[in-house]
Length: 209
Image (tube, rainbow, N blue to C red; front, side):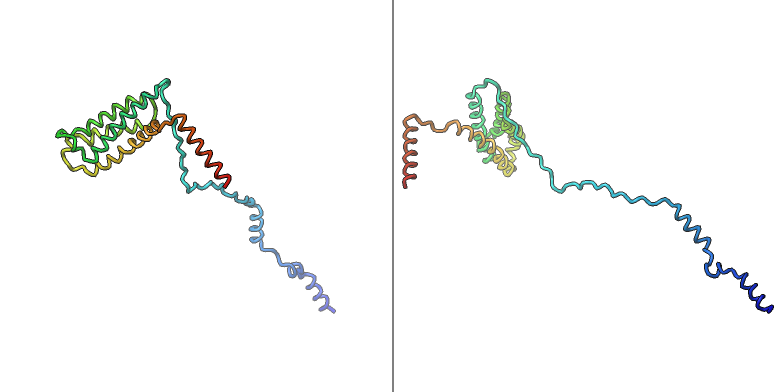
């Protein structure tokens, strides 16, 4: 049967591998090959975090500078300077409250107080580093400017002079406390014994009752 031979020859020439397994797309294969050649992307490093600035203000703790007194200085000398300064401070404060017009026709008392402030402060600063004397000196220069007779005669600085009196009162009160501390009442031996006996009697009474 010739037709069977013909069919067999036709079947033998059919490319079954192409029918069952279609050929790969060459373009797609090249893309996959090229993708395989790309270097692998290294993992991103986490950014270095900087410490955020603190919102809190860093307050510098001020340490008090120790006061240095000149070696072998007689304490009586320093007490004398403090007394002189107190007298000038008290007078200047009082006159400032009156606008410096209650000290004669020349109205120069405020200016004179300023001169005395500077002189006493500069003299005492050679004995001690106490900052109160710097404050007094600065007030002296300020008095010479603001309480000059020409300004006092203008009679237009009442509020300024009242504020100046308040500034003068600050070192005046400081010097006053020091003077009061050195003049505390002194008791004799008999008074001290009497006070001690009284305190002892109170303690015994408290324990028994």
